[in-house]
Length: 276
Figure 1 (cartoon, rainbow, N blue to C red):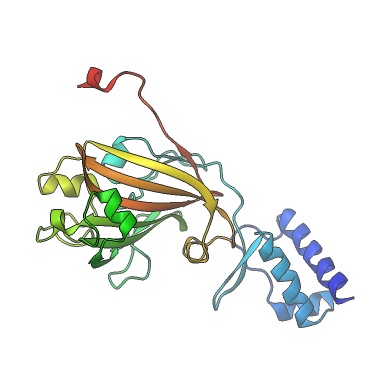
Figure 2: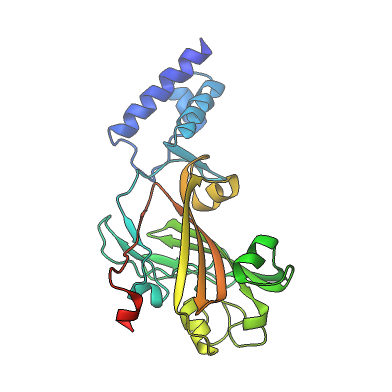
């Protein structure tokens, strides 16, 4: 009987969400309120909420309650070598806006809640990245062309758009390149908040190209938490590396919520030497 009861409650809440009574971002009634309104026990109400969460319709937020999740978006994130990217910004189309002025991963965009506080331009939130110094893991050393365990700066970034997470990034830069320079920390110094392209240019390195390898997978538990996704939600995992000629200057792992953005790449048709 309890199983049938929780399914009945879940079905009705699903209908109410579909009818727009509860819209994306709205809180659902508390477990106690649901129990009273449906005439069921608290455990039944909780089971109904768990069922909706497993479907990705709602998400609990610690200490705040349970909220209706946003619907899948048709927004497209341009990952080509655009002017926005050179300036360290995300280029996003669709969803009621043309271009987003959000800061691209690896440019000094930080995790909300840092000591310096967020900077909000009305559409994106930028803060100071969390950076640490350590030895390069084997895979990162390979991507950066370093000997095993060479020192690197590791930085974490979260970029939000319209109050919602848009990209999570972990980047690595060789201390042999940036160590002792004004740009050794992405979130400090005269180029704080600037793009990787601008920061490297400041110390005499001209980034000439980048590579990106994209994998479709499900979010890890940690990624789902930071990106406000349901467990097992699809993401685009991007392995990106910036180069000056053949020399890698920075590499990063970018994670983009699949339900919020599509990725678009523009590939020039003419040979590279024709553009020289």
